[in-house]
Image 1 (cartoon, rainbow, N blue to C red):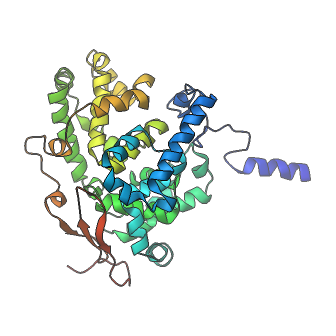
Image 2: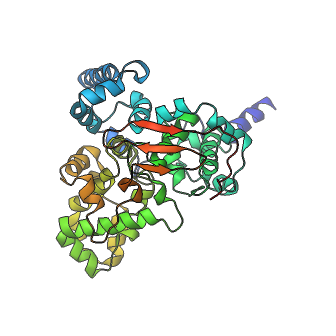
Image 3: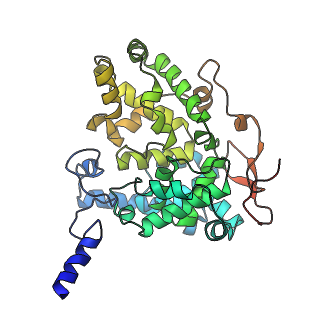
Length: 388
């Protein structure tokens, strides 16, 4: 009987201790976009280990204990910070640094108890939708695999809290991958406030338009991307026109999930390092770099094969050490990218230094230097929408 019970216990979870996982916690795969594809090529020699240790020591010195020196260092040596972020944040410090560069740490400190109130005492109209989608978020990662396990519970809490915090946005499926990615590097409350910082624009332009009804910001970005492809990769742009290919057929998820949905995890992490630091322009640059890298192959393909290729890029193109330098070489400022398309509209918030958020929160945009001067809640009472 005891033997049978032990066998049942072994079979009760979706992942057993014998299933191999890569260094990020994903189940190892022989094919496909396995993160381990790109880590295999890395040497594990003592020289590389020493180099990584030196990198970590530099970062620890730069940010200080718990991030205490970050703001001072970032103001004093912005170019050093930018260069180091582009080279990749050490994985052991990634969660903390993401909170520092996004401004979410400030939001957390200024709003004690708000997240707990949202999770425990409020209800959301999106709860059933969130529950339905939970198992679709990073299903091959051990943290999210177990039904009703700690990963799925944390993901539900963060998404539910945000859907109550901002009832205008509520919950949209693509938000799960962003929240899931954050939860792999920080606590629930930290992940929630980083999601708030992104969608409400604590440092960079707000992302909430990506998730509003009819996805207005997605449509704007796709329109601008199409214009940029025609200008910077004209041969491919012409081929897309001939084959009636538009960015909505392949690039929507690039913006909605910031490459976290289907891109190899090491590449997604490196993109997120820069995205949190420099804003949405890196999404444009990575997309353009990917198309430019694969241009010679893409221009030879007819419609059906072209659609398949645009959703299944070759392994060498997805290597961060290959793709990101190409992306950085695209010399387009954020204003040029955001205003590139004829008739493209600047995000309404970027033309105003002050805008309103739900729940009585006021956000003051202090770009271009970053940081937050004002993002303070009124006395918290409930999460109902304010009367107009």
